[in-house]
Length: 187
Ligand code: ZN
Image 1 (cartoon, rainbow, N blue to C red):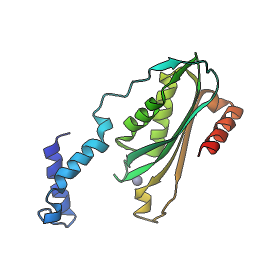
Image 2 (cartoon, rainbow, N blue to C red):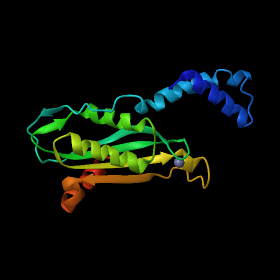
Image 3 (cartoon, rainbow, N blue to C red):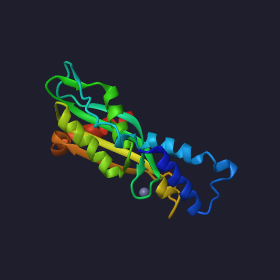
Image 4 (cartoon, rainbow, N blue to C red):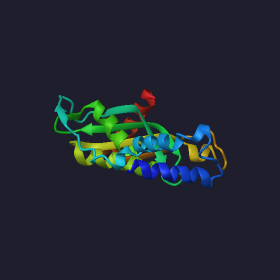
């Protein structure tokens, strides 16, 4: 991302929406926005998150649930933030589990780009399913969308919920119920 190009575009954008980008309060805004973009779209530039190093445990087949993983992303339709919590659950296999911080970093990596909530949910589920030994993965996201709250019907505080399952959590109803019960306890 070329910082100067972005600065110029933001300057132009401010002009087009009817502002005066040279007035005092806005003078440094293009630089600030370029910096912010660099941070919130970081996932587009970084190499794909691949740090799925697991460690050996005695646990096998017992559901592990990690809740309240915060995320901030940008809705690809309106370029406004959507944000909330991710819950990840999985059934470990081969006595291998993933360190908790890896979940946070995986979610952070995929959030930092223009995205839609459904696809963010799916990609997190897919990445975990493919990269750690498991017999099932479940991902839930609850999010607020500023494009819903600031415009249109202004449905403030509405939560959009999405979910994605793989393996046993997809095919075995009992295990999925177990997952939702654990989520309910944790939230
Ligand atoms: Zn939107």
